[in-house]
Length: 342
Ligand code: C2E
Ligand code: CA
Ligand code: CA
Image: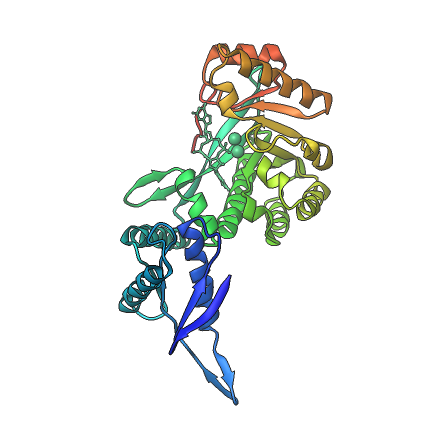
């Protein structure tokens, strides 16, 4: 990228290959944060504020002069909004930005107000129907909008850095729930929690888990960590280290949405998950779809040969249940057995 002085106190930052407007927004955020740091000049702290205007090539204009002019217009719009802000030349980006910022603000408040809850969806033995465990799924009990599903806020929580806190809340709440079930003499097998990519690579994950397990007297086999293939595939050295620490604690790992991420299977060997969860998209069209049947069969055989348990997700019909059982899939999860329950 290029940073240069344009005139007076105006500077131009040229971002190459910024394909998404939100990528640019993230960079503008970083620039503003960097500008906020006071500069020490001859023993005095001086603070400088910046306003940023953004024009996008080729969406807004294709020639340099027009781009600079549009960025200038957007910069004045940013100044009008107040100090230390940025603004896009195109209004629709600004409204999307506002919506995102509002959601992030609301999420922060929701954590403070304790508006999140966990629902639990059972996993049962494919043959006997016996309860083997359940998966904890987060929901947001929004005061106006009602029960908000996770796909509407997890990404925003990741983008604004709240996912760590939200993840810690999930782990602690699941552990507290287990302790309470035990106190009532109920057996539940194990509880699986979903850990998202950013949360997984944060330094605090292992600490959060260890602390919650100690506080709520949770045995390692009772808490299962669900990770997606994309998490297990990227940044392999760090991933390997964290997985080893989780193994060290004795926690079972499950690979979520198996078959939808990457086709490389070498991570199965390196990371030794105890469970694979066959994604709902392979189960949906069973038993009719021959390709899906062959794929599911192959996944089950592969897993069995490696000593990994297999869970089928999204089981909705009795025909699916019967076929999966015949194929040799150990465990079932889906609306047929139960929807996630408070
Ligand atoms: P997932 O981990 O694949 O969770 C399974 C999703 O499938 C859940 O949606 C569940 O309600 C839904 N489901 C289960 N059985 C059936 C079925 O038979 N048919 C159909 N159509 N759907 C079924 P939900 O609760 O909306 O969660 C969506 C995703 O949000 C989850 O996908 C997971 O990736 C993420 N998520 C949920 N809770 C958490 C959390 O605490 N932390 C993180 N990082 N992600 C979470
Ligand atoms: Ca999951
Ligand atoms: Ca899944």
